[in-house]
Image (cartoon, rainbow, N blue to C red; front, top):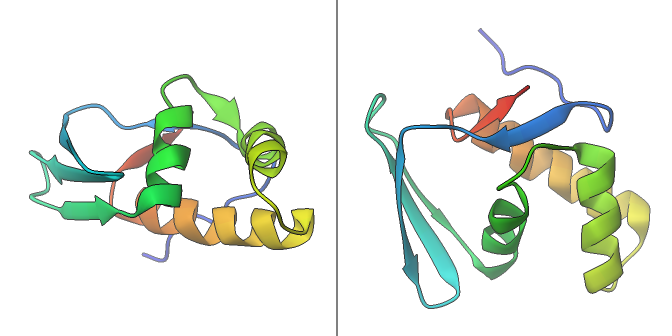
Length: 95
């Protein structure tokens, strides 16, 4: 089954049941249920930290745009790519 197509209006949050550990500026995580291991770089780790509370992808994009330099359209495209991959691996939930 292909991953769900995410849109800026979708509300996303961290999935439950993950073991996480900080490794410098990175976050390492393991899903107990699916045995999926994931390592997030500095920026993806920042996105992960922002998902402690559910928010829409548009809200997440606004927050990221506030803290990073870049065109909003490109940042949104990058977020959608990251979040789609995390959702496909059960790392985030669409709520």
